Length: 155
Image (cartoon, rainbow, N blue to C red; front, side, top):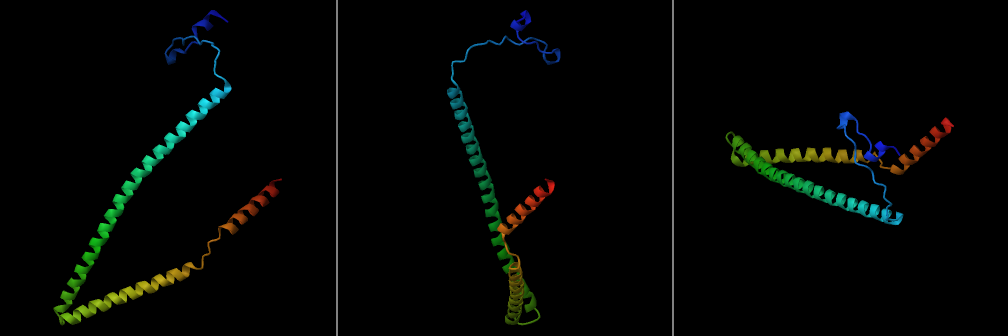
């Protein structure tokens, strides 16, 4: 070895321009089994820490989702009350021209008509969804066949 090797490797001037401390060549007393066990222990600790972090993140996300769901439920309940008030206002508005009982009957039948139309549209959509059959097995088999043909073509 040269004399400069005892000082340690030189660092370029743009990185500080000094020499690193000498590397001591000592015989490591740890066996390969001990090294593997150390690596395994560190890796398992890393995995446990990552799982713990994922749990914390999931807990925070669940709290935010829960708060958002509560707010949506409150908004839905208030919307139902608002709908009731608007329907009452419609009844009173019509009652200016007709008797109160007749205006309530008109608004009630209008609501039933809207509900019937929505129910029919919903049933039609459900029946239309029966056309589409979910069959992942055939899709996977088709993909495998296409891959086999592609490999056979390139050979």
